[in-house]
Length: 334
Image (tube, rainbow, N blue to C red; front, side, top):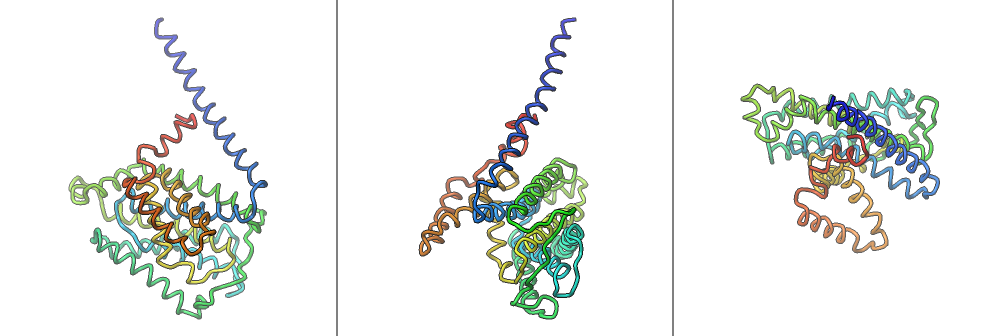
């Protein structure tokens, strides 16, 4: 008899939490939609760049943050996804696939490239792994720059077809803003679920001690390949969105600087923390745009800010404890 009020209180509390979560989420979504008409096209383009880099950094976070594997050639998968759309949805080869098919193929090509990279580097660690992945990224860029018959070389591929998704023509930055916003929400949810899965636990064990992980029965080869392929598939997906958004691709868009920026977003934002990845993308993408008025000193200021961030927050701007679960509690979902 005495337990009934407690049970009733627990039931009432469990009902209130989802209601609070739905209400807070609805407010955020509506505020996001309402803010779009108030922004200038340039501002929306900057936000789109933030969302694209958030996608890329969330993918690289799987390899660096969860599995502890240093990948400095991640731009290769971004380029593979972008060129897959350029070749399959442009007058260059006279092919025009549905956009949803291009998205699927871009992710599949990225995953395949991730497996091809993962197989020869399974035994490498630390600096050696970083050097090999860096070389892979440069090899892809050089191939794109020199195989003229397939990629049109340094001239790039222009006049990509305007994508359509279920009858929705994506022709303005606002259109891509909503597409990217939904895609970031889906990818972040999937990556978070992977982190909490059995595979995510295997990645964490490999990150802490690869030999010990193998000793307790974890198939480290399979887990590493899963990390590389999953990360690369998201990178390929982001590449398709980037190519469709720009309607032009060239090797100049996929240099080592892009790989370095993605890695910096992960490290400076917070390794292994999706909230940190998002915050890192916002700061490191928006900061150069905010400094455009200081052309001569922009990169100097940018570099100084990066050094100060790393010195002040060596574990990232957002510590690991302020991750997705913390964000869900703040929204009332937990």
